[in-house]
Amino acid sequence: MKRRSSPDDTMSVDPFTLILLFLLAGIFCLYYIIVFQCFPRVVLAVFLLFILFQWLLVNRVGGKTALIGQGITFLDEMIIILLFSLITLDALIRRKKLPFALLSIGVGLFLIAGIIGSLIGRTPFYIVISDMLIYLKGFMVFYIFAYLHYPEDKLRTQVRFFGGIGILILLLGGVELYNPVGFRALIGNVTEIDWRVGIPSVQSIFIHPELFGWFCGYIALFVFAFYLYKKKGSLLILFVLLILGVLISMRLKAIAALAVAVVSGLWIYSSRAKVKLIGLIGIMTALILFLFWTQITGVIQEQIEQYKNPLKPRNVLYKTGIMIAENHFPYGVGFGRFGGEVAARYYSPVYYRYKVNQVYGLWPEGRFLRDTFWPMILGELGLVGFIAYAGVLIYLFRILLKSYRSADSTFLKAFTLGACLVFIEGVVESLAEPVFTKPPACYFIFAVMGVSYSLYLNNSNRLHSHENNPGS
Image (spheres, one colour):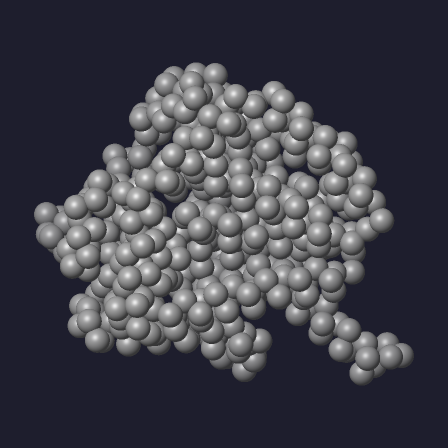
């Protein structure tokens, strides 16, 4: 999890070093702007690739307390703000109307709710701004990707590229399963291994197994979507292997999210072959359960016991989030005050008020302070912000469905269906993880939603042009 430096952290750096760093940052920004103007889609692909390896790089350079580590930690947000500013400036110069009015209204509503709560609670300005950026960066990524045009051939190239990256990460996970200690030492990853039912929770290049489980599920859902339209045996085999990748992460929420998304995909997919596909998925599920029954039931029983515990940190955060929403109706306690990264970094006084600090793992520097999403929304933004944020997600899902239904080629049908499925996966995982505000999940989910919206707008404009010029 990210922890930005406090003002005291930078005081030990001499002024010359700071000036040099600012100059290097300026040169980097200028270079990035020039390259983005020439190769925008390539730049965004490289950005997403960097996000996958970001925390591994931080660990390799000495952790986030090191100066270089802090720079790498901040780099994603700096790039997002830079690119978002570029597309906004480009739209103003070209006097191009951005088709994001309804989405912007929804985002504006939950921001207003958070700001009002912050004003009532007299939250320091730097905390409000820091937390607002965390809420907004996913939507900025959506705007950036939606603003660009994605020709089908360019999109095919990027889908193949990230499919290859997914296979590589899966293979590395297999190596880690065979020799977890040696593999993590080799790549410089965190050395603590979480063993469940006698199996190491695999995390591959990531710093936590939940990220590996989510990413395998993310790639698996796109592979599944393409299998529905391509009917290639190689895609089915890859889908099964990626399911195994989700399983060896030993994370129940990743398994559940994948299952819900696959079932949803079969429901969305319109074909006479649906019955056969359901039968095939049923056979595959039965086979996996037969082979890994002991491990799966062990993980499920372990999780059930934890969820029944009223003092489990996540349960405490859910209960407290609801209490805060009731006590501070309808706006909540404001940005950076409950359940999120900023509330943990600058340990919120709200935690003392509700005696959350007395719960295991929720005291200052506790490892479970960032373990939820919807309790954070309820606590910080109140009922108004909760409804607004949920409304934004519903609106985005409607956009994805429209993009899927309007797609005019097999490839685009498969891609937009995959985007629908990874969104559903994200919604399910958001019940236990802040996937819509935490990298890499938030960037990858909002990126494919942005691409899908771009495809939908392009198709709508083409149809509108054809209707106005039927002879063209």
